[in-house]
Image (cartoon, rainbow, N blue to C red; front, side, top):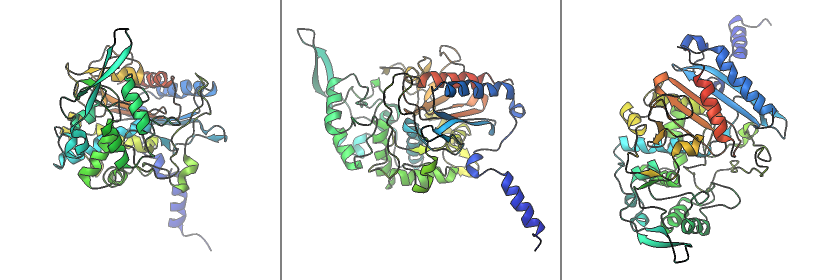
Length: 434
């Protein structure tokens, strides 16, 4: 029997069209949107050499300008130990690139009148109404000591969203009393850094509220478990589990089919894996187990995503809260989130951009570090650009002045992360020619 011409044509066309995950945005030639193909190819050349040198297992990088995908490369290995090459649809542990998802969720609830930036956290969890602050000092011998004093005020939702709630990460805080309290409470996992997914939401809230604060709320910027707690606030305000809220209100509307808090069994073959040991230090690498649903959805470090999914999320932010038919946030809310929320009264222990890329020049908004001027920072960029990254090496930024978004996904934790972020930032921006 001869094939039906129309059916045959459709089958032939489908063979040429990549699957949906490979088309995060409409594709275009770089020159159509003022970028140089030859200059973008430098990204491939540079990162290929780093991969060949064993500095990275593999990476997926995507760049879009004017809403068009102009660069997309999967380089190296998805799982080097297994000899599996990297693919565009590889799934990555996002770690702290989970935080912007939760910040957006909270902002959506703000727009609906279900919470306000000025709401005290105790409105949702009374346990946070009476906390103590661990204040360091020295005894007569010059030895460090700590005294507990009452918190002068309750942390607010805004404090959570900008990391000024007095909370900390037990893995990095210099406050010994807080570090010990977090360790005793199970808020630090000695076997797996930045993993609180084994606690139930109720256990997490109760234990965090009982631990002392590292600073008076609203006085100091310190990277912390604040967004994990914000995730619990989202659950209280919405009446839904965090993962369910994000799936219904953010991931599905944006077409982010591979984002969530675990990887289904039929997709585990796409999960990217790290090298066995860190190339710079020789230390063994262990990452969160995402092969099954967690006890709690960790808003600070627990999600998984793909480069294509995250690019769509970033493009939505660049568009002022919309992508296609998905109406996620208003432009005024996106503008609020990407403004300076530290001012001169709040002092970072380590500046957000020093933590992320080892450079100065950025302040912090609600979920993102934000560039204040063209100079100062040790990377190219423009005022108003905003970004964040993840423990395992993931990185993204949105550059409104250049109508550009970029995403890098890899699974390479360790001291080299800041170098690769700076490397990508300068390689992408130098490819802008108009």
